[in-house]
Image (tube, rainbow, N blue to C red; front, side):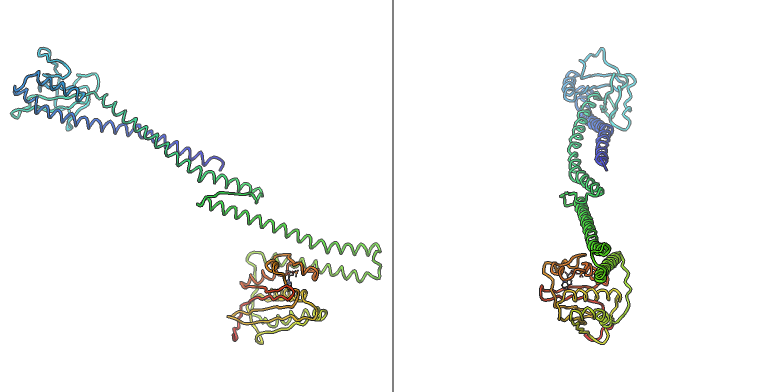
Length: 473
Ligand code: ADP
């Protein structure tokens, strides 16, 4: 954007000013002059008619003397700022308000033609060559016995009209300047409300593009620009959060890969350099094998999580019997349970419970939940797996009497790599990924998973699945 938007706006302003002056200078000046001319002509014509009906008629009827009429015309001359003539139809001027009466040397208007005004009542010009400058002239006939005896002519210089037109035009210019200055307020508003916030937004986006996602963008307006800024900074926050998560994830992964690798390396080196005698090799190779198992599990979990997170995760949904999946999963833990003398109690609704879901993934959910329940259960305890049917949904619960989850950790257990402090001692091989995978799978099915747990008492994980065969409630 740089400064172009501002300059464009400023340019539009200058255009506005330029064309404003152009319009006033051309149209307004012409119109004002025309208007003044017509108004003056009208006023003069009215005077001319009055004179023709009064003094002039009296003069022609010999009811008054030329001197008396001259005096009246002199008064009108200064009142109207115009010359007033009384002349014969032949063009001979009998009385002229500007000159004393001189019967011997009367002015004669050569070629006087009363039709010069056409269909208006005034004419502009040098009045048959009588004047050097242009005159606005009106004349009214003096009639007696239905005959035109003469004319009352009133003449005023056009330059005087131009002067008053120019003073009016100056007022228009002044108004235009005031208007222009006032409309600068719009420019100030534009600068404050649009230009400055836009510059801030641009600067912020540049910073975001450079990777500085923690750059603070503060635009406090509550309009579209404010909304845009708020959305942008929200986007940046989300991106920063994502980036932080990504960093944390990589740090966690590296940490979780490093510790088994370090111990594998340590044992192998000790075996090679003889620190561990050959007769002990089997024991330590077993440990190494366990560590590689852990690495394999970690890698598989990460891959699963990655696939689950991919958009439009594909579920291969089929109708299957949940009861038998539960039974099979429980059976895979038989060995571990025997070691810890843990019993798994199945309380399943119905002979069969047909659900519509991705069987492999639900198997993994059950596996993760049961694996955790066994890991965090005390010796000689019971784990209950129970299914109940409510409103076409199966509620599956996996409940143990283990160490439980501290209240503060309840929300966090779904996060990747999260392990409660309590569990660290009990489970050194856990990756902290199991529950996030579990939740992703249930979410992908459009279902819910929840946990109820009390520290030191036990935990219960409950998730739902859509049931196909409703059976009885
Ligand atoms: P992990 O592979 O470490 O078990 P999970 O994501 O499955 O990872 O579990 C995350 C953490 O939640 C565990 O490390 C443990 O602290 C806690 N947790 C999960 N299930 C239980 C349970 N049944 N009882 C107590 N704590 C549990």
